Length: 321
Image 1 (cartoon, helix red, strand yellow):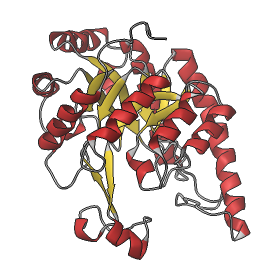
Image 2 (tube, one colour):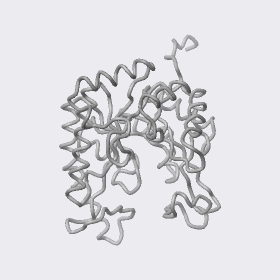
Image 3 (tube, one colour):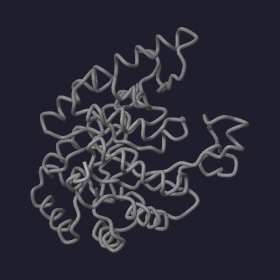
Image 4 (cartoon, one colour):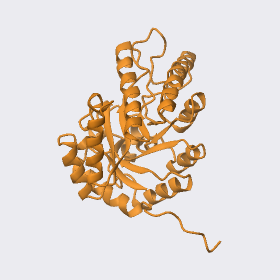
């Protein structure tokens, strides 16, 4: 396994400077954003797509720092009820898949997207309960929309031999492991998870159980190393469906935290061990969104912890067995 970083927090500097910095703190892989909510500071898709010269420059820069690209990121909503926004997200995704194929990158990370609750709706609608009955009807409509879109997108991914890692994210249709498997079953094996535990922690989902569930189906295509802390005092009063701003830290029931600040090192050892049990041996890509510290400090602390817990060698023969 390798320690990686989604480079978005370093978007105020050039990719060359970002790679030099990350190399200096022991990072071995980078996830590069090329559109959507994550932006494209380090990989402007239009400049690199079908451009062998630019792609060669990127490979040379990566080789200089002995790094590789674990995934291209383009998080957006291709199921948005606004046709223009949906079309833009679809273009970003399809072109990211094409660019990943050209670069020899295994995966593209993104969201499942979220439609409105009906054809007449103009705002994405996250359904969290089947009652009153119109909510259950809306959910089935959304799954019809998603299955139609992702069946075609999955074929596009297969054509380019690039896996699509969906981040299970609330306010998206796929926000937990069973929904991920439902969409995968409706499409093909190129659809899987960008397993980000941060959104599962506050939902009360066991991370190691979820890894085993998805790992049994070979459905973990990429992994985000990102932590969350649930603050029980606030959660006891208002639960975890918290709409307070992320920057209103004292009053939120949970916050995204740097790796190790939501769950300790022993937990992350269990996570890494379970990933190995199910056959995942790729990058653990740190996504920094901790509002209590700076990007660099959060990255450095996360890298330091993960370096201690990842396995850098393959298992030997079990001579004792």
